[in-house]
Length: 131
Image (cartoon, rainbow, N blue to C red):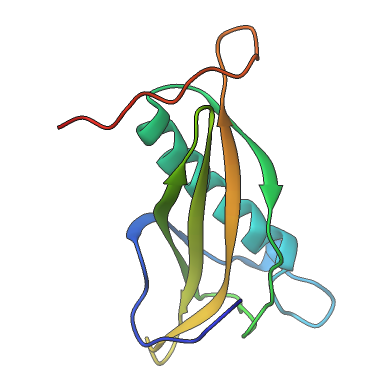
């Protein structure tokens, strides 16, 4: 469930600017663009935790809280929530730093599931955490 907080949860993983090419007819940034940025951030966090290739296999429900506009800086935060034998759940939050006011607002969040894979694309165990 999406909840609004004043501080992002997790580690800043991706930061990018919303550009005019990423908008819909109303001038708002496409939700799919935001989802793509979140998937990239989750992939980065997943690769670091799994120490190798990962693929996205699921995204839990997302609710968009606020729109992203051209010129906003999208900041995506990640936090590994749980690790199974071959999969991991990573909580991902997207926040917009507004172009003119520089205020920060939560845009959306979701939990993504990634699976570690080997060079042949088959699931492989996620290594135990290092001491």
